[in-house]
Image (cartoon, rainbow over all chains, first blue to last red; front, side):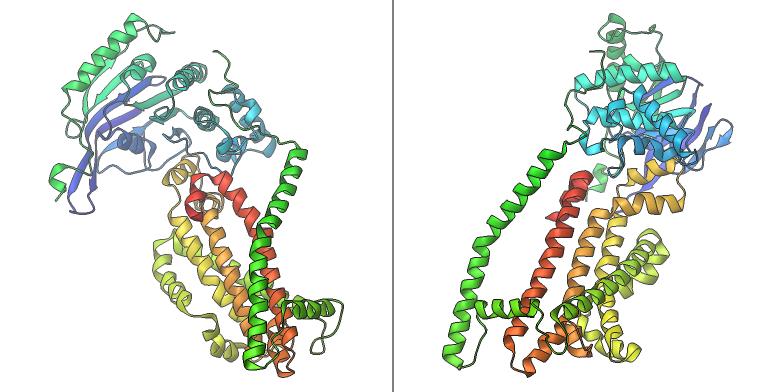
Length: 260
Length: 292
């Protein structure tokens, strides 16, 4: 349903005016209902790739098609969950979820927001402001906000990276439950091999350009998976080895030759 | 393990019961009073010393705190000052202040939004605002007189024109530094330009805008008093201070100065203080960086 064809994105580095490749020639098809993880080290352009899929930035070359239509701008059908939740601090949890439902009548909007908050276990916190919530709760509100849009695909940019290990495991299970319930397609960016092995149907291994897409692995482990089971651990190990093959990653805007 | 109602870090309770809040408010008032008393004492002692020194050295009557206080009392009791009660002077001044400041806020918000959100808006509007920011309030007098002649409208104009630039610039700064992920989140949820402006950029910039409003309000207050002295408004605190001098009624002038200070302090502590505290708490790190 999401088709990437030789997708390339360059940035112009401010000091030197030189073109820097962030994503280079990625061709990939995301299947409907699939849970796809984009796995790669920090700074390898996987967030850039997600921003291209969301329509936040246009590609330099190549195309992204969603359900046959070229992606030119963000839309509720491609909902995004950000790394830092990006909830509006001046709104309550419920109002944050309601933000994307402005076209609905007030009562229906309210109801859907409360339903979604209930789905992520935060029914009691509908009237709390983001600063009153923990990091994990904020991320759950962000997931509720995205799912309330009834998206066809959920784009998640390292959403659990800043959470402590225990919370992260809780929210991962929560996400899997919602994914199964709503049959949404998920594209999930992470640098954590174990997270990828536990969550994904398919893992695309990414490296710094020009090795943007190094390969991918299909995950055949049946669900529900055992987080510490043999299968998940073995796959984590395999993914770790995949990553170690990739040339060492340098942040795209600070390459050695740029330093002078 | 399976329950998700409470995360690992337990959050602040959502509903606060009213009694501890009221208690906390009373505590805050008491703390405020206790904190202010030593500073007030220093001020009074210095004032008293100055008054006695001036009386000794120059042989002129310099109103002491006590004389000022007495005069203030009699003014508040209804003794007219320059054919009008002190209440008339104060309400007239406040009226001009509110009018000028409202004008400044409206124009400042509009100009700031246009200059902050659109590139051509920045090019067209920002230079004038930055220029206006550099001009001291009283320098507008010729322009005010040319536009409105002598009278209260000239004062209102001067207030508006000195209060507007800091407001507009704070909106520009605030809107430009909005966390880009807020904008992306809003666009992902289908927000158009209008929604983005009113429901995301403006509230996100609120901490900075409040600072601008505060500066603008201070500017307005200062130029109001100075403007009334010069533009000939017939009433108002500034007018009263200057006119009281002709009758050698310095105590009344001092009483007016005290009123100005008290009014300013009331607005600062009573309106802006609580507002900023609320915004800082809710907006989190965004607000914190603004206050230092």
